[in-house]
Length: 306
Image 1 (spheres, helix red, strand yellow):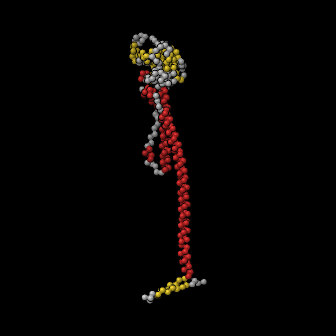
Image 2 (tube, helix red, strand yellow):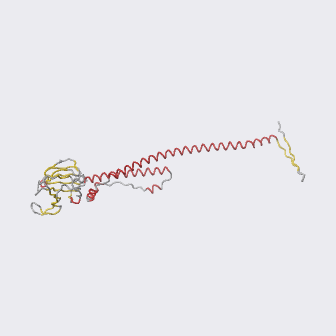
């Protein structure tokens, strides 16, 4: 069926020009439908775009929530690591405190003894500034923090071992007087009290009353307790780190070989056994087999450093 067609005549009275426009009903209807459908199509397109944007935003939100959850977990882990480090620092700080008297005595020990005690130790060498220059994202930041905290933990472990060995050296340092009395002879050249001949005296002679207590000047293991020629009844104690002490001319022993002793513990009694002219204690300190002057280490009276 042919579509109806209409002609519209437009005349200009001034110029006399006549224009005719022929239109088809079908074309008019199609144009009208198109005009009516355009807003609908625009609305549908906007709705589809909005739905697509919402879906994209939902995906981004899900990703962010997952990242936030990961960051929270990483933050909690780091917080726990920091808390553990704080406790470790407090522990090391508390254990590193030394009796000032013992610390002064330790300073006078030969460098070889102190080197044997402290060992090499390890230090954290990485520079935080250099590591920070590589940070480009939050993941890098958390990774850097974990690396730094792990390095600090390693350093603390090394520090803890050093503190333990330093404390062991402090316990092993002969720092108290081995007996109460008066100093009758110092280390060095002197005349032999028996023969009157010149001799080298390797220790301290502390005169006192018969039976006065004799004290271990540091923690250690009794190597021997017996009669040793001119020393008479002698106790020898190994304190580790190459340190040894000897206590001669004793009246009696209160310890035996193999016993573990502490600083200030009674180990015997002042006597005059062996080559002695009166009641006194002969006391020696050796480092790696060489005699030291005990006076440079003695900072406390007996009992003060238990």
